[in-house]
Picture 1 (cartoon, one colour):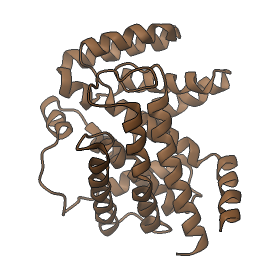
Picture 2 (cartoon, rainbow, N blue to C red):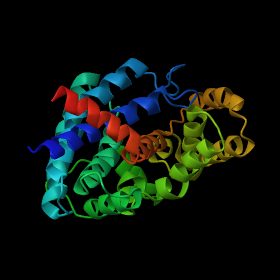
Picture 3 (cartoon, rainbow, N blue to C red):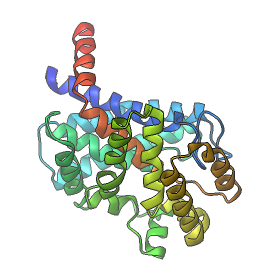
Length: 285
């Protein structure tokens, strides 16, 4: 593996893992695992989520490596899918069979792959376009296993994670990423900026995790409540909202995955972070 390819693959993998860890550590989040509590998840802990994220570093590194400098294709689609399935098996080994990051492997995997296609030079718009093009190729070797997200997408006629990727991640491009940047430009703390992005996703996304747990009523409630808090800017209401989400068994897991994907795209475009990692990489190697 040439030096630039190795460097970028390691950087992209670390950025993906850090994005997953930032997402889980963001506090307070309604219905989700964070530093204060486990939200609607009695089988998860923040420690387990961190371990799961760390276990995926090699998965993302391998996806970046096989995608480096090439274009979307049927072959590449199936290659990264196989790497992703291997990553899922590693995740399940680490978590004792609990699904912590399956949706994130899909979304982040496609974005890591797309970023590597441009050798780190692609704009965010180009990255999501290439990720969408890759996602639109069928995976002929995908095991025929019905997932909760897939069943819900059919039942309620929503896109789900697959459709989101195939449409070039519209909720990231229209909502979470611009709102994240706008909140920062207004002088808000990084945590508050990320909460703005998350609430925007919950308010607009047809989150299949919410639909699976509580149906259309739960989704409508979550969207309305997130929009109310976002519009008021009063994040002191988030603790009470977390209590209500927990009581109703609402978990916006799809929104959490897209927040991690948003943070990844933001990192991959942060030249300062890339340059700092390059110095560290060159020192080690």
